[in-house]
Image 1 (cartoon, rainbow, N blue to C red):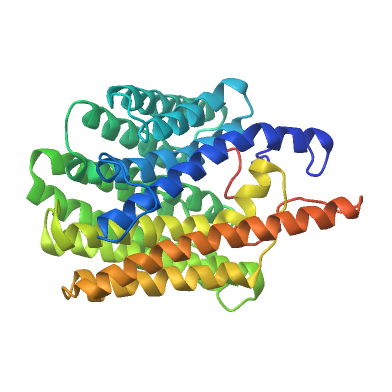
Image 2: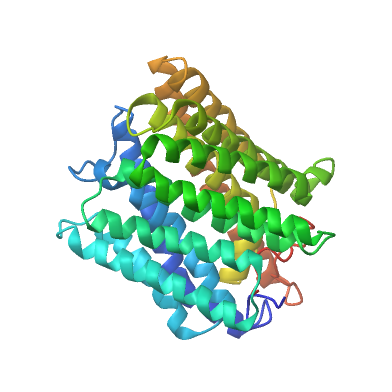
Length: 395
């Protein structure tokens, strides 16, 4: 494995490269803020901005406009080729155009282009060094492409939910496999992992043809994948450490727990396309799993992408605690027990947790950058973490 950056951290060239990538990260951030605004409306609460179609594009905006842009940007940085930035560029632009009054066909086509380019990125990585981890990540990109093609063809978002889930879940799982391979991992473990990813893929496709059977397959596959991650990920061995490693480990294990909740709901309740069950699955995956993973890796991802420091601060842990506690209130009490007040309060606190994390991360980064500029010898390299080192690298 080689580092996912071309210039030494802290150099003028690295800072210029980070500045060129900043607009793409900004596009992802704007999609996130718009998605949070839409979430307020969907909760039945007052929102700063109201638009007729914003609630309808909320899911795709968050998954592809926000998270998809981040995934593609990190992969583009890892590849280090100018054309690679077209992938996050198309995804970010498509997400922003979802907020505009233009015909939905335009942003949908941009999202198709972005997902297709992301698949092309993985093809290029495969030519460099094939691996099981790359197969998983490429399967995630293909799932994203399938989801947006179905959406372009008129399939509604609840029916493409399994495809969107597979995109982020198997992509992130593939990246965790990369780290697990740094330690002791027997060949049979990789074969089991590949079987879990294959089962997720089969379940996703089956949900379109036979929703009841597909839901059982998908739920079972997600639970099997969670079991593999808990057993083989280094997170559980470092939970008793301190600082960044402990924070990252806690976020990872909490993420796996929420993915298990989603898998169990699909397995036990069957297809979820509306109502409280749908809300529970959606937010268990995209807040409990995906957002927790983003929080876990932000102190390493952002310095690698923007070439700016992001040291660990206890405020980041406070935001993560708030996210998981409020999600428990929303899903367990609000969705599963049918208490509307708990659902609304939990949802509102979910939004507050995400905003607290963004503000805390930005504040910590700006403060560290000022200190580094005041000390010429200071380095802005990504903080060393046994949990994160190597997870965002070029395969």
